[in-house]
Image (cartoon, rainbow, N blue to C red; front, side, top):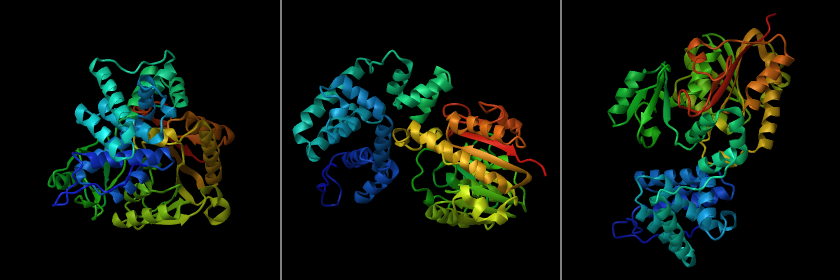
Length: 468
């Protein structure tokens, strides 16, 4: 980890580290923590607690940390190309510091090249790498000369290897993408996965409306735009700061939910007075969406294995003024055994299954480096067990929506097709016309990053249980 020697301060308490050096120090620490196994969001929050930053520096630290983590494969390629020592053999602290400098040179238009080089060299001097500061300076200046000459990273001839290196993807994922989609679509997916995600809101229909929320946000300088075909959806433009301080948050006028996720709960077509099960419910965006759609009349059971996550769900439901949601800590695969009275008792069932999250790589900077094909195979077994265990809880003729935030066919269409083959009485229901034209696969809802709505990647299948 870089040195934690406190920076010198002037008489009024301001850091005398130069513009943005503190933000870069935080980003460097996050890169090293993630490389050692920490999750990016948790590592960033811990570093910001150790060294609080103003809003602009906080935003810079976040951009540099998450951006360099996403671009790890590509930045290693530059180190392999320009350095005398391959990236994998570099001292870790040096490797991640070079990533920080290269990311600024190659991917950030708002950071002047001289500042990117000088601050990275200064960090080396202050962070225990003074002996290697000339190496940092030389490599970054070499990269800058290549960039100014219009030279880019040389790519291999193999299409999958080239996609992995150019767009910073694990090689196995790049190869799979080219099997699932065209080269153009795979490239679009990769670019979208490297783009910081937008921030979408879902307006609480029971407490406000989109126009009122727009006006309230505009009054504090935050621009919000309507989302097409999402009657309660807004997207924020520009920086918004701490969301909890924005108008309407405390009053439960809105919650944060990606535009793609806002499409899922309505597929259940839940009606007031019905009994609904949201299995694997945390963090609860879809549970609260269901309660709002049902006008908070009926019974919604939100089940999850994580007690702390369910407590957050309950607090959010309270903030939104929703009383129809009940929480239950349980393993959803065992509900039919542990709650025999629930068998055949639910009108609607939502299974938002644990998945690889390949549709949300832009939102989770380090996820692509954690996911493996072996882990996906294990998830597929869990997903099949969840479907098998939850199906008996539906009433005859009841509706089940299976959803994931992944684009992997084995977790989605292949899994649902296998379930239908094994359960002949079940049948898929067609998507609403407005969604059918957006989906990449009929009769399933299949949304890909870089296409269509522009949000996360999502899959959903609407199934109907056999009639009595």
